[in-house]
Image (cartoon, rainbow, N blue to C red; front, top):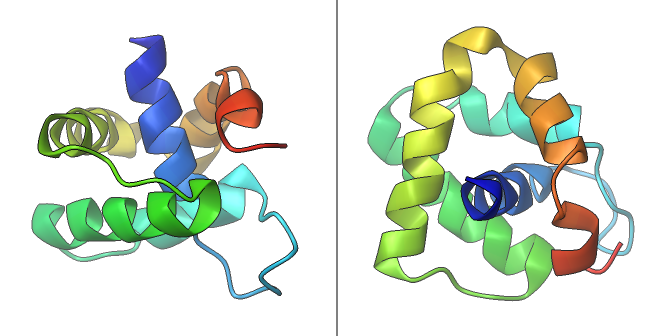
Length: 96
């Protein structure tokens, strides 16, 4: 479960319009990912954002798990999901 939260967190944390050097807040990143209109669009955004934020590509299985985490928990809201990311190992995986 921690790996799933980590993967979703990396993906979500990467979404931002700030400079490339700056790290976005998890809440901003989650908000942007959750704003995508469909599960497929959110899943695609997760993959793009993980690549940007963490400089890595997810396997198909990892992307599916991260997407499932987002879909299962998106009704809990941006702040809940962002809090889960903040409690995960995101800072280690993405070089915070």
